[in-house]
Length: 207
Image (cartoon, rainbow, N blue to C red; front, side):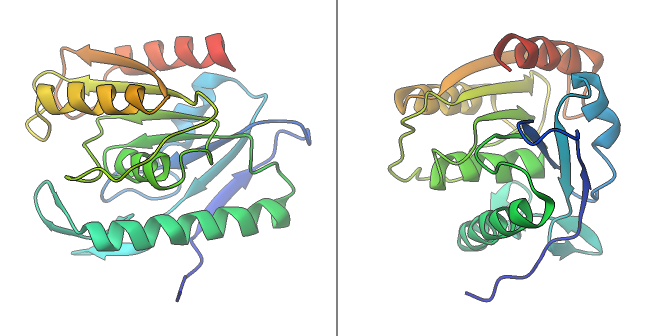
């Protein structure tokens, strides 16, 4: 496949045993966006923040879409495979353990992380999904053997996502052996302080 490298920022914790927090930005963001949020989780892990390879009207994304809330699922699959190939290569280059990676994604980045969970269910050791949507309308067969923990926070007044769809998302992940914590917050699509407080509490409880 014609995979392309991704632009990224890597910050080492200085410990070969450290976990790595993989940061995946939202539409129009870049590899700098989520680094300030990562500091809330402490300084004992590596940070790998990447920029999506797709441009939509000049705005970086991780995969194409056909319209608002309508994903180009073929491109999503391709970009997911591209990202995994990149992560395996960059782990060797930067010297971190690719099997100790926790994804943190917002919006478009959360959907990319969700696709990782579906197409590579044993690849991540955890995931934080802020304002995600179902990555695929018809979810393929998938199952994790590692009881991978997943944190989801969704906004009750988020016009992008229906509450029942997020409940379905949680249920299908749980049915396939993921350990899911879902938080429905009084919020829209933008993040609020409660998102971070709950995610940090979840993170430190598990990692």
